[in-house]
Length: 594
Image 1 (cartoon, rainbow, N blue to C red):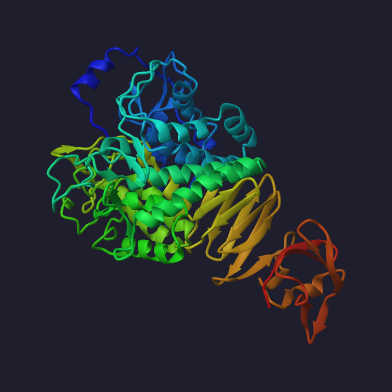
Image 2: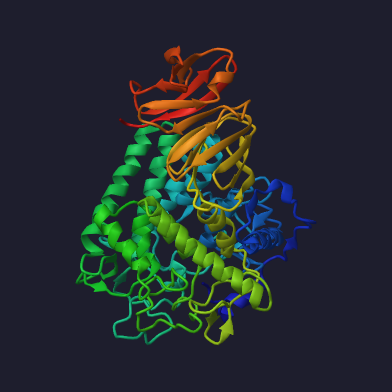
């Protein structure tokens, strides 16, 4: 990830000493509580990650934001892409961890000219601010932050433009930092391994093997740099739409489409089914497969056919698959180091794995995303249990349950830091299965794929706090505000309070009517008829069906056909409705297309 040279070490003595936060014990009651009886070790590792992250909340005088999230690498220096990735787990406990606030330590010195005591290690680290803000917004629905960010501060637009125009030799007078390497040309960006975050990646080599620790070919244009700029443009466009700024939305969508077209015309290799770095002069591809090739996929730049080919590489045990997926260079690459990964020569790093898994999800490869997530989490858990010291590491061996090495030295321990993405984010999103949250529309999407007792308590998004616990086909839900819970593509309207859902099979659901568990409606969803078990207990045989917004759609009598009580809803359009049966009971029903 980073190398500190002699000159950098000298600079450490010039920076004011850090005062560490006296945080006391971590208050777990303010953090979501996972339940996973299938493997309690994952739960233990989850809490270990939060405890390590808690220890890395730091204070420092003379900086824009204190306290802030420290990346677990250096007490004095801060890194852009480490911080951005950490926010993808800090977002689950925003009242406890100063995640999104930590970005001010970059925004204000870089784009407001504020003098700071914090030293920013690499100004031209991957430009991930806009993507991070978008993902944080999805969980919080904090429109006031986005309006200020885009209309007043304009930090996201400024950073995109800075990355476009910065040149080697650029120096910020108000902050200590390393020199920059980014340089835009017509068809992409010249960059460097350390600046990309993938320090000793073999990308850019000219022979079979990389002859240098960092090839840094001056002729190479980096696929991740241009794709990350496209991702930023897309995120700015989406955030603009969220606050109703159509002009800004269209402006950034146009920028995104220009980048997308360029990437697909120059960087895609149809034969190999992957994006590569290119030669600035000849446009030839530097054929070194790494997770960097998945940034265009995360940005939504692939066609379905391209995405299929990219997904196949994750399944291939000779490429990015195998016992531990998402190696940082293909397993069949000449520079792959199977024993210990040698940092970015094959180690499994959580930031690139997390990015790639989210790219798979974008194109609907949910099962593959889940399987690779659990393989990584299992690998981290086995390392935690069996390797001493028992902790979370900077990166992991691609073959054995142990930390990776950088040369002959073990990588850094207690790294939460972005390695918390595995035990926290991948656990919540892909193992437990709560893979998508839309706080703006109050929707949680759950890919339920376990039968043992599992779920999550104290899960917060927007103005909702909910608990969702499944055991077999029964799901118990409590919430302080209503929302929509989508279980395996079927919508359920969750009211404030407690309710129980009974799931019958993979796609057939029977909802237990609130108030009396002896009265059930099934099958639900249905194309035509709903049957009511226990209807003879009702004081009235009347029913009514309303739309979610309360508009009356249908009413009538529950029919008794030879002792079977039924309601014909074949005339309704496909959608979700609330049906009232008798005088006391109501239930959500899903009408499928006939």
